[in-house]
Length: 277
Ligand code: C2E
Ligand code: CA
Ligand code: CA
Ligand code: CA
Image (tube, rainbow, N blue to C red):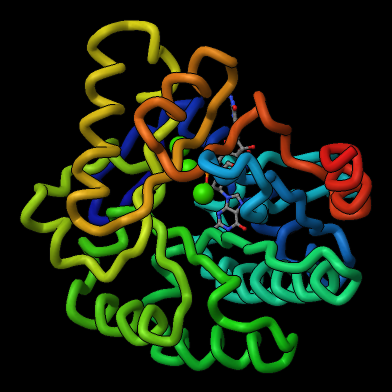
């Protein structure tokens, strides 16, 4: 039991205390992760379904802490958001990803796009738009090769402010993908108001495409997206059957272990060569 002032006592469960300690430890070590070079990016290919060619890559952050070992983004991104470390980390990710893809272009791998996950905390910053445009200028990557991945929950925060930022980036040619689509609560009329270019169907709809229900759901999402003038990407594609189905439904891009797992930066060029061969 812990005293919570004025003679009232609050009971903390042991699990809750443990959870809290874990967060503190992660936060403490994450604070120096950038300056200690503990962060890196892996790149997962996205394939253009119609041509079979590589459209580009999604940048996925990796953290190798000398103390904690490999920590999954699923366990540290939320913490980084809560303590706002996601601001410098997110900027580091965007810069590293744009720089890398520009390098690939320079080395003769032209035309590849890069998709970068953006947190709502970043989008709420007044200088978010300037930060993105600044990094494009600094790295020399033309805006049409950059796509930002956002989730529906972003728009729950401050719809007007966030929409206008995304709208101005979109006008410059940057793609805006709505990630994990289908897991949120957006109504279709709401969807129409969002400044986006792509719907990214959540893995949960792809998982059991062999069940008739999910099959028609995935098919409907592709149709709705196309009717709204959007491109549609499927994430989490793991089997030949899922791929074949998505090709039949004219889903524009696919991503998943069936194509490739996320690839460490140093191995990307050789993966591309291997696929071309
Ligand atoms: P996400 O954006 O939905 O990314 C897809 C996740 O699914 C990645 O996990 C990827 O490795 C995994 N994945 C891809 N294909 C398959 C598949 O075929 N089967 C299965 N089972 N999994 C697949 P990862 O890299 O662990 O990232 C987890 C989440 O962490 C991401 O989910 C994203 O929300 C977040 N995240 C990762 N990097 C960043 C980043 O740089 N910034 C922000 N804000 N969030 C990030
Ligand atoms: Ca994503
Ligand atoms: Ca996703
Ligand atoms: Ca997902």
